[in-house]
Length: 330
Image (cartoon, rainbow, N blue to C red; front, side, top):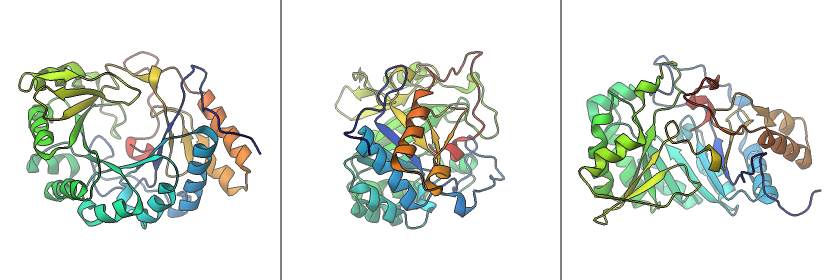
């Protein structure tokens, strides 16, 4: 057995402390930038990692490499049966445990997730207008999502964040509405630049509403104070009147690859060193072949060592990943 924990460092000196775990590729929405309207072919259930397999990888990464943050994603993680069981298994680890959800069923499970040990939650919501929400998701569930956000607040999650993928000509006219929504409800809105991971492969740079545009639009209504940048993906801005804050994840126009500390585990057990990685490393195969902890860690270290300097979006070197966001995990 190897000895004490050590940092998980790539060839560019980046220390990795954030693990994103997708628990399912399935989703009860059909968001157009995430999957085709007619859906995707779901993974057979036997190809998904079991809770025990997920817990083993998570525990190894915490104990061996000091991973301090774990986020559960999907697909839509709440459609995975007995999700609270997995939350309870991971909550005993010394990590900041959080979850990203579309919020549609959150009002029914928020209290149970909090009781199981979940502490933070992000809700994806791209429009506050019912007709537009239906057009974007193909589901008439805006009221359910808003109720879910209120349930998350009531359950004591802190903070509650609302993720908004901003698309030019689609929802970019709702920036101030979302700012007002966050201020009124006491949640942190995070605006996300549209990235080339849409299943229909219709992304173009012209569809990207930039961080500068987002900040300028909101700043015209609410004076802003920038917050010092950290390794977190969002650049943060406080409202000068004390009405909270919002963030912008500018993956396209203001790349933060040089401070990225995230790695990913897909629902079918593939280890990814970047959201935009074109190569995956098969942890499921090792887990089910009876691999030792050291063998699993060797693969993780090899994967992190192969991480690129950056994703290259907007350059001739960019290679689009073969999988969409719902298949990789948000």
